[in-house]
Length: 264
Ligand SMILES: N[C@@H](CCC[C@H](N)C(=O)O)C(=O)O
Image (tube, rainbow, N blue to C red):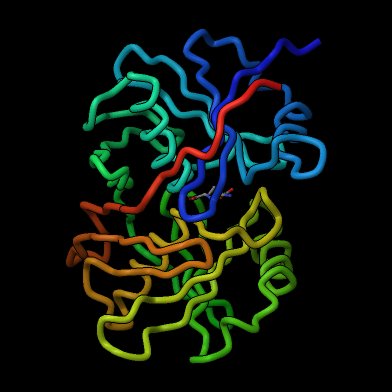
């Protein structure tokens, strides 16, 4: 029998999360069915994922991320930004923080206007895969596909993303799939739509996804900082490209918004 759960709902450029203050370590992380139910948009609260904020002896907090399918997920960039805002609301941090996530330590800063700058883990490189696109891991696995100008808005991201995510190449571990359109004029943003593993649908944005897109776009003329537009809003990714093909000093910046709090 589950106890009453107090939660906060947050969203980062439309990627939305149930946030739980689990500093008392009470939430059963093995209860996949409960996480799935809480994320269900008809029978539960509704979200792309659920995030536990837990105590950690060496960091300000630990972030534990679950995809909407109820299973532990890999790093969530938008969720990381929302967790920083949640930690600020709880009084766990002031403005600067160093926290632990599933892919290791992250530094972040939250501005007075709520904008969050999240440092991502370094990325070793990227792999061009004929007929598929570019594959890289920014804390979560991402396939990046550069599409011709003008087709992104009409693309069936659900069908095309699902086919690639479950196809022969990625079936075993899955991948997130990002469909990208380059800017049509200088100063315009790169446009991105993402099919997300573990949500198994298009989300309004994906933080590790736009990070992967910005790094892959650096081979198509994109210079740091890269502005990216998703159906859920605009994000910025700054980075340093190293001579060996790796990327360091990667920062994902964007809003993280409190939506409501409640009990269930
Ligand atoms: N929405 C997240 C990505 C969360 C993990 C992803 N669904 C996966 O399973 O790889 C983000 O903002 O990065």
